[in-house]
Image 1 (tube, rainbow, N blue to C red):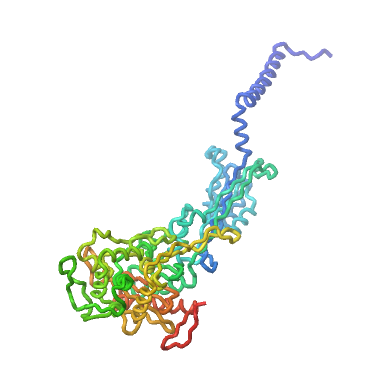
Image 2: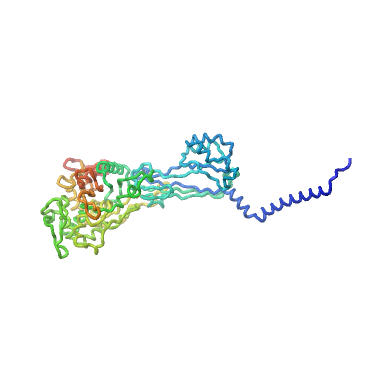
Amino acid sequence: MPPAFVSPARFNLFIVVVVMLFGGISARLFYLHVVNRENALQTIEKHRTSFVVQKGRRGEIVDANGNVLASSRSHWVLGLDPLRIDARDKTLVSDMASILGMDLASLEARFDWGAMYSGRIREDVKWRKIQDNVDDSTYKSVMALGIKGVYGYEQSERYYPAGGLASHVIGFVNKEGTSVMGVERTLDFYLRDTSGWRMGEINGSRREIRKLRSRDYPAQDGYTVELTIDINVQRIVEEELDMIWDSHQPESATVIVSNPHTGAILAMANRPSFDPNAFWKYDLEKDLRNRAISDVYEPGSTFKILAASAFVNERLGDRHTRFDCSISRFPWRNRMIKLPTDDKQWDKLELREVLIKSSNRGAALAGMSLGEKRLYQYCKAFGFGSPTGIELSGEESGLLRDLSDWDTYTASRVSIGYGIGVTPLQVHSAMCVIANGGTKVSPWIVRKVADAEGRSVIEFGKDRRDRVLSEYAAREIRECLNEVVSDEGTGRRAILEGVSAGGKTGTSRKLIDGQYDTRRHLASFSGFFPGDNPEIVVTVMVNDPRNTPSTYGGRVAAPAFRNVAQKVAAYYGIRTPTPNNAVFASHP
């Protein structure tokens, strides 16, 4: 049989095809390994390298007894990689929709099975969200279905287990993770977590190859912030505010409770209020503002304690010094000025009676006897016109005009709480000076910052204490204020059962369209108990109360003080000997 014959043309064509084939492969290899080597390596590295950011947990906020007021809880954000889904899993989508409580058609649209073959999906689209806020058990149920390309990542959200309790103090963190107000904002540096990261390599199924992990820096949780707030006292205050809100329908109301000796705030609350778990439902200006530190108002008669205590402290007289409250004019700055009026016509009143009966003329005469310079200096010494420095955002300084701006009538009006702007916390701090024996102590609401093991990182409450009044002057005024809370005083509705108390009522007219409205008032009461050795100070401010026979502080705010003080005294076991109570039990 003759050998196979191959024509020279066909043989040459075969040789050319083989040479071109291997030449093309060689050229491609040369391009990949020499010309495009760097880009190829970067592409390979990009697809093999895994860089995962690890989030820690934001620190907790707890009350003085360790009760959690703000914490963080985890949830899953579920989604899919449209480039990795497999049409063979299509039958499992209905089960997934049932687990998630989603409409099947809506979920099917997220998968869009044919998109990757029709060119409707770009290669860099690797994530399509299906649902957020998925709890842990639901996420595990979905992942158990084994649908290729479906996965999720864990997120942390802020949670406030006590709801709206102490919301103005705590503040909140918004959806973007930004701390907005309260302790959440002022101590954000300590509360926020520090992100970690992990670098390694992944296989073709996008799973990490643990033995090739090259970097692993764990996330650090935020510190725990412990407040001076006592959740039980806070609840007492909030319940009383709810009663004020329902019965008097005021524009706003505030209650503050503290220890006058240390300055520690035990409770601080306002109405209207809000639930930080649903902060977006509330009005920023109306509901979210902490009025205890941001509302500036003319205090009225509660401010008379300043003029009276300064008068005694300067040794111009004592609580028995008499003032002629029958006169309507008084020589001042080389002219006769008109004194403020009283609701009733009084003759000569002792200083203690000026406070008991809340005489405007008597307080004005006491303040004017100091002279403008000393009166102004005492206003500054008590802390008016300056922020208290409490660890909360949004605190106002109040309004105390420079002495050079005082006119002929300023001294007489400031002495009775007009012509000066204060916050509820400033009035509260001034009453603490009287209660603790004459020392100005800065109010504070954060006790300490602690790490995960409970070790203190920073401790608060050690600010400077300034002597404002002598112990003698503070004791004299305290005795006067004890008589205010009696059957003869304007604070008779603040009398406690089994506990002596002292305090001062306040009623100031609201300034409406540049004029004082005689029917609309800011009613307040600031007081302490026990009367002889105060352990607790309570301040109540009710802005524009309605549905009451009288809008005066003695009618509206004094009963609220009584209700709060009575329950707080019972909670702490405070009792004092009174005519109706011969048993004494000191505060433990």
